[in-house]
Every structure is written in C-alpha cells, then in structure tokens.
Image 1 (cartoon, rainbow, N blue to C red):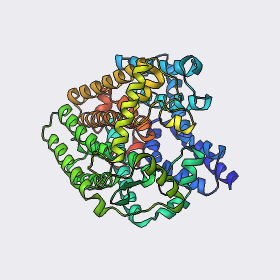
Image 2: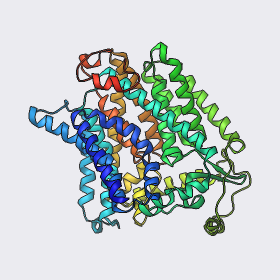
Image 3: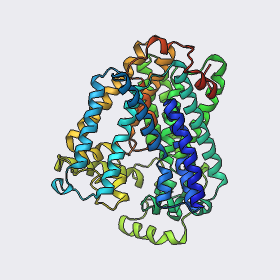
Image 4: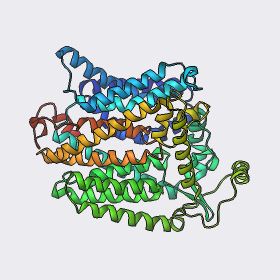
Length: 501
C-alpha cells in the first residue's frame, strides 16, 4: 500500500509542481483548497497505514509547491537582472524578521538557556518563516482584477464547503468514527502531540462544561479554531464591497450565511470578537460606516448563540480510557464550577488563555534575550521541550527570538496593515479596493487572535493570508488592475474559477 500511495503522490506532486512553475498563482489556489482538507486527508492516510517518514513526505506537499513558486520567481528575477518588485519599508521589516529568526536558529541553545533539539529548531524555523516567504512571494507576483476576484470567490466557496461539511459531520458522524479514523494516531503519534479530548482526539474537539460534553464543529481541519479562522477571513472578504456583481450577490449571501453558521458552531468566542473587530477595520478602510453595524450584529449573534449552544449542539462523551486523566485533572484543578457555561468568565478555557498570556509576558520580561527557536508553543509541546510560553504568538515569538524579534514582528505586521489600508483607500480599481479592504480587515482580525492563540502558525493563514497581503501592499499596475483586462496569461485562470467574468 505504501509504495503504491507514494507512487501516486509523486505523480500528482510532479504535475502540480509543473503547473506551479508555469503559473505560480496555481500554488495559491492549491493552498486555499488543499490546506483546508490537509488534516482530514492526512488522518485518513494514517488510518489506512501510511505512516512515519512516508507520511511526512506526503505532508510536505505544501512546502514543495511554495519552494517551486519561489524558485520560479527567483529564476525570472535572475534572468531579467532585476527584483520582481520595488522594495519598501514593509519589505525591509519582513526581511529583518526573517534574518533574526535565522540568527536565533543558529545560535547554540546553551548560550540562550534553551533546551530545544535540532528537530524542534527546524520546526520553529519553518513555523516562523513560512508566512514571510508567502508574503514575499505575493509581493513578487502581480494579480489582475480577474485573478483577485477568482481567488476571493475560491476562498468564500471553500470556506462555505468546509462549514457545510462540518455542520453535517457534527450531527451525522460519531466520536467513535473519529477515534478509529486515524486522526488520533496522526495527531498523537505522527505529529507528536499529547491530546486528551474524547478518545485522545484534540483537546478542543469538544466543549466540556458542568452541563455536559458537547461537540464543536471541527470539519476537515479537525480543529474548531482553524475552521473558525478560515470562516472569519471568508466573511470579511465577502463583506468588503466589490466582490460580487449584482447578479451574484444572492449566491455570495448564501455562501456567507453557511460560513456564519459554521463559525457559530465552532464555538470560537475569540473568533467572533475578531470578526466584529475586523468589520470595524473594514468600515474604516473602505469608508463605509454601515459595515460597522455588521460588527454589532456579529457580537449580538455570537452572544445569543453562545447562550443557546448547549441546547443545540450535539452531545458527546469521554471514553472509559479517558476518565483516569479527567479525574486527575479534576483532583489537581478542582471540579468544573457549577454553571460553567459558554459565557462564564470562570470557564476553564478562558482562564487558561488568560493565565498563559500572563505567564508568557512575565517570561519575556525576565528573559528578554529569548531562549531560541523551538522553546515555545506547539513546537515545544511536540518535541517534549520545556514549554516557556504558549497560546500567544506574541509571547511565543518573544520567548524564542527575544524582544528584538517580537518588535520586528509587530512592526512588520502593523506596517503591512497600514499599507493595505492605503491601497484600499487610494486605488481607483474597484476589485483592488475590495481585495485590499477585505485582506486588511482579515489581517487585523488575525493579529488580534494571535494575542491568545497561535494564529500565525495555522498553515491556511500562513500560506494564504500573508500571500494575499503581500500581493496588495502596493496597487497593481493600471493595466493589471483594470477590471475585465484580457491577457493571454489570464485566460486559463478565468476559465477555471468562479467569479472570473
């Protein structure tokens, strides 16, 4: 089975790499759709017997396509003897961040007081550099108005498919199926996590309250948070005026409604707040005050659904083998307080986020030089490294790359957000204003989410959002920005994706 699967994978990867070499934008479409299904597919492959180094090779499809796209851009730049874009201050900040990340990868851990091994350092390097690489790739590849809208429709449609599939799965698929699917082995044995959700599924697979244990929507990400993040980006792109012509607004509204339902069932309260904040940013950069009303409506809907969640979400349960761990947690931390519902500030998930943020900030303050890559977040958890900080990209970066790395990360992303806002306000082409506004709002939402979770490390965001942000830092040339521009290079893209006319 392994040899056959790898042979099929090799053929598909070579074909995809050839397509990306011809048209690097193909990689962006592959990331939008492929990363949404990645965890489910890898789990099923693990369950079918493809494991260890063989599965690692399949997992690397995304890095391989990114490398091919970067190689094509570098090859073109070498042949033309010029950079593919005019460097700006925001680009210098991105390169400086990459430089300090590489520096902290090569400084011996013993010098910094870190405990990460070579494998953890390499994983930390990949985690930190993928968004920077995707951003620089986006800066290097001009997108026409036709391509921008095609990408936007692809994101919204893919997010709606993820949400719809998750809603069906939540009620139709049992936790027993998930336990036997390969997901448990994939996350715990292949990736090295130590999860204690039902049947050793990810911890956030279910919501555990004094009222019972309830399913959260995980869909093909096998994660409520990653699903919620994709839905937030899709909804902000859909809310930015200009994506759909009048004849397609009904379709756009229907897809947005499905994304909204999926987002609510993920029970990601931080994502609801981030979406509301993103809508306020969108209202400001697009100068459409009425969009701010959607932010208020989002908060109201989020609060109402959270209050009703335990009445509408399907119940689930822990297995007999889970109970020893659960009893130990209850002995150490106490039983769940009575009435620990979704909106209770004493609910363990909310308390955990606040505690981890506080502890991470204290660690950065005590050790401002950083411990080196691999000493924080999911990377440390996977490789059994003492955890210095977790659940916040800001504290994780501060712990790994010191205050210098943290300051560069914040400065780069704030400069990027400002550049996107300028593009959304000043460009004449409607498609560019739409895309820049939606991506600016999405980036603002993700930067807010990063305060209490590792949003920067979610592959779908790392590859897709920062690529689009790079592509919209400065306005495309008038020829490529003109709506309806017709070039031979664009025709294959227009014929393949919805919204291209």
